[in-house]
Length: 122
Length: 110
Image 1 (cartoon, chains in turn cyan, blue):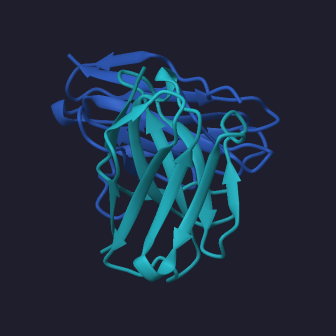
Image 2 (cartoon, each protein chain N blue to C red; image 1 turned 120 degrees about the vertical axis):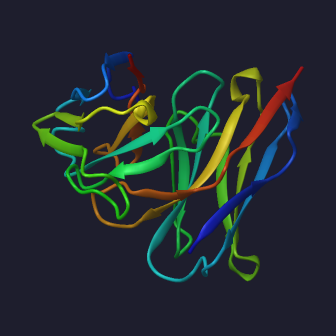
């Protein structure tokens, strides 16, 4: 079964770029029609969808983050990555990666990674 | 984009049924074909419990059911158990083809 695992620095300095990687195991990132997503959750708060990349490489981002976000895929490593530029304390959160079956009009996030806590320091 | 609206908290006693609502703009949730629901226990990643508004993934108890009417979706948990105490989130597409989560509902089993 497919499993996802986030990796990257747990501490990023303010104004710098947050870079995280999600490694997919148990299946090929190119195997089938899926969206590969990043979702975050500030401590004690709700979930916020950051964006996604399709198997073909096309991307869609949360409008509130669009100017600072980019998501890419490295099929040779079975990974996809998140870059978030110009971070502030408001970007401190638990970051999840998750797969979404690309069914029109139907969000379906499963499975999820275990999450990676990223703190932004001043 | 604003979050979908969920009650901040709901509670119920073991064996009872509870319903959590998820409301959004008719321009988004009203036209979005489907809603999915997730359960999140403390310190754990969210887990899919309902997709396509009414369907359960394999392995999810039939005590969980979903429905949708207009711009409101609902999650009902029957035969409440202590293990159901968790946070619950809904999600749907917007007309811009982006994803939106509800603010989350904390379920307390009394």
